[in-house]
Image (cartoon, rainbow, N blue to C red):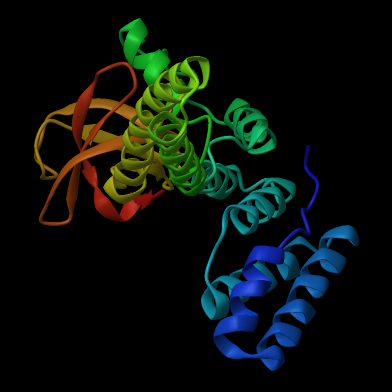
Length: 256
């Protein structure tokens, strides 16, 4: 749903702690101005306000989501896709962003069939994307505390039933803790890797080598999501979801 989200409590709290109330009020004014501009269909003003917020106070998933909505309303679908994808990078559980990015992709030229990975990779990535990196970290801490509680129950009680409960509870908790640590790390690596980008040029000829003299392989269009495999002298080697590989000018890409 293309609705501007106004829940910026976490960001506001951070600003309050770091910079003081004056900055918080200034930020809130920008947030209110952005929301009012969106409600009155002044989408460029909305974008300008959110970009100013990003510059002055940093970004969060909801800011990217709201930017995506404003760009979608402007029919700037590549920018909408870029911002929805950035939202999903930091908050993969955002269902609205996932639905909206698919709506934006329907407006783009390229419809490329993706090669599906092995089922266990899809399953593992689905679990990873169930929560953000921060949420996985908090769950790891919770299960570690439960592990300590289970150990305490095992070592400091005398009833056999409680000792068994403590032992097996601690065992389960430490396993779940390690699983959460693994997925927190996987989410962190996914965020830091930043090897995906959105094509911003209306039409691009992908070549066999990083030069204008390279053989023309195929043509892609704005809004397409690609993986950047490497860069060289202003050119990027890209890979499409169907496995095709080639080179295009780096200036035509914007990293998610």
